[in-house]
Length: 298
Length: 259
Image (cartoon, rainbow over all chains, first blue to last red):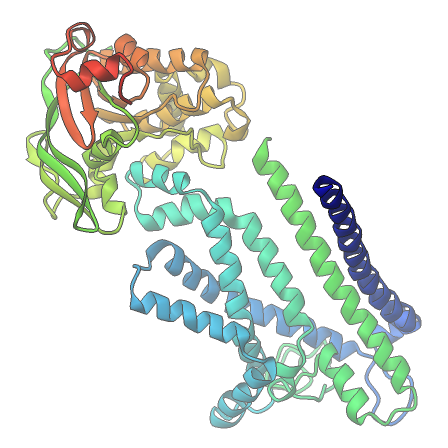
């Protein structure tokens, strides 16, 4: 009797859990399919990808936004990766078990749960106003850095902790310092996991809008890729110019856009954004799979 | 092979004890001597303090927070527990092999060359020669000479452990500590490790091996010390320890009544 009931219970649980899993997948596939199908006509159109955005007419492109997104991402990673690496190495390898360490860990956790709009407003007050940097790429990159550091620290921390303690012992027992052990033994072993984590965090940074609205700004000056005068507004590499990204562009068009083909532009931008993020995820998976195969046995 | 020298004491401990968190005693009052060119076995049931003791000898216990070492550890006549002792220099000349093979995630060659390079040995010729010499000393060179630049992880467990021995020997230590080096290995690989222990001793190295395998102690060691519940109970020539144990606890352990 009881056995019968347990078996029925098990069967029902399996069915319900499978249904939930399938539903989740379907939801994801539906969203991706909807966005890509709606935006396909634009997203695979080269003139849209490279063209200038329009204020009032139809037919605008997202060239500057696309470039801005990647440039901001690059700068953010350049700033946040070394900082996170340092913080994670400190926490895993050096930090004594005391109040200060616990404080740092709590601070990182709090930082990771801050709403991104709050990070954006803080960046607005500090970088844009107090420092007088205005709406600029550097303001945006620093805001995104604050947003990205907690994620990266955790990823790198986990990657380092996953390297077995025996590797650390082996290094120390050979008379290497803690630093040498970290740099020459632990980091190489953790590198695949770290790279994967950085790329996955890049996906989140790439799609972030709220933290950028008030820091990198909502305008995208036309870019001239032959202009290498870094003080000029049209020089793509100028970090003091405002730079609207893809995600901010979507928000901007939908909230205050007046172009007639607003929906088309918005759908196309969303599709491009999504494809980029999917690509990040795919690359991260490829790298981690290849690396784990390489480390397991060569 | 170095000329057969008269064994001389390389490392000795006087009343060494270990405390965790300043109150939990893991080990108490161990006084032992270890000579060059000999293999010494530390035996006893799990948790008896033998590994804790071994990890005092190269101060690996210093890596554990709140771990306190009492007593004196004399290495070449100098007390290494003094704060001015250079940890890194000490561990260069006192090597250590761990219970599970732990090669680095690199090529066989890099596994051996990494530490010597950090300690200042440069140049391809010098390093090539050192890698070959170390692998030969660990009886591994012939098996891996054609794949020095492939991953160490492709080796069998026994080969990995001999690679770890070679890695230690590359720093030319005069003491090698082995912490249950065969616990993850099959009997054939175990025999190969034991032969390596003997050959290290023949070259004048002082080998100290922790083992819970009494046959291993009987086969490979010259002297044996028995640990029980954080204390060193009895020590002597291996043959005598196994044939004529004095202490009752050792007799009970050898006959399987405790442990």
